[in-house]
Image (cartoon, rainbow, N blue to C red; front, top):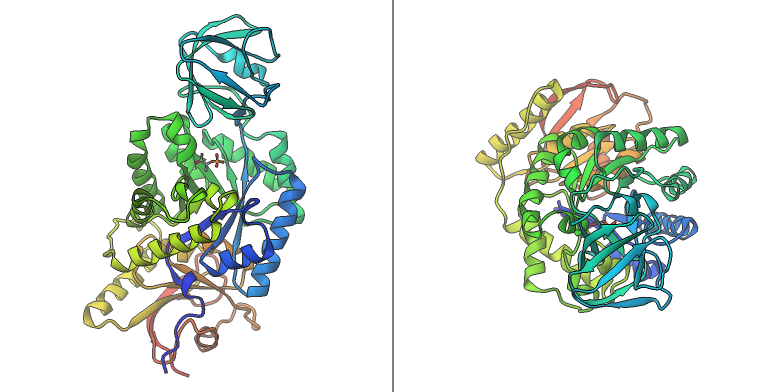
Length: 480
Ligand code: PEP
């Protein structure tokens, strides 16, 4: 009898990240979202205080343990985000062409409060200021020091506390704010798998975050959010320093021209893939599902196209955080991913093989390709990967078959939840660094990830957990 995977929703190759919020933080909903294909829960610390996040991170871990279904936690730090203050009447009406004031204090004129003095001081004549995802546009007329006169370029009703974008401006704001440090303090007691840094501008921003994490003993992987012009300009150094990338199309689409987004999405995904660093395609993927149980055709195509781009993960934000149809959004996203993966052909990549590990991994992939040309019996790759590096290097080739990464590290198992095509299996090796393929295969069959008679391509070293110890590629049949 051929037995196949325990969790079909999770054997998809493209991972799903869902943002948790008031629409999705009940135990029942978290359970349903995990069962429907969520691999990573994102905690957006722009909203909610430390306790809100702590309680829900604990809850997700508890439910994941109950379901025996690993899910990872991504803590998304606010970073140097600029927001306007509160209006006395909660909102103000803006007329096209009128002159109003940006200031730290309310004045007798129509005022938008800018709490950050540095931001106000930086505004120069003719500069364009965008508020609320770019829906409101202003042109600076005159900076008078305490107040800045601006011309309203489009009419509408503007609410309090909305985000501000200053396209092209080079502001010297700290990359990590006090609220971020408090979230990192929380992550000491309540460990997370990934920390994302908003508005990353340079390698130094990541290095500073690393320092703060090291100081506290937070061992998560760092995801750099690409969401402004600076992060595009400095992308190579940011990618080199970070462990993974998020194409944060929300702010990116305000900071650069919208029509450039697909170009940068594809370019960033390809560069991440070449280095074996996970990349998340994020924001407005199924946006209309915040209010409607069905997505638009364009949204369905957007998710499918990210799969065609070979992204590691696709992400839901408002759809699951505060939308009316969080479960439906995950279910539909999962359907699009599974169907598209099934129909899409394979893709070749000229991945660098400048280390012996990469050369060995390429050898394994070539063996797989050679075998599939003879027959279609290879069911999976089995990779002994303590740090996850070997699995990530293999994932660069985006093979059609799953990569089962056997690891004795819970940390690695969780962090691989963001890597394309990898199913990480935790296995305890009772004899220290001695491994036995028989024991590994028995475990994988018991967990119904493989079945007797399956052919697999194995990558392993002579001994378990030796750094740079990968040395053997073999074709094995599951028999015992
Ligand atoms: C984005 O801007 O696309 C994004 C993901 O960031 P946030 O949701 O934190 O604004």
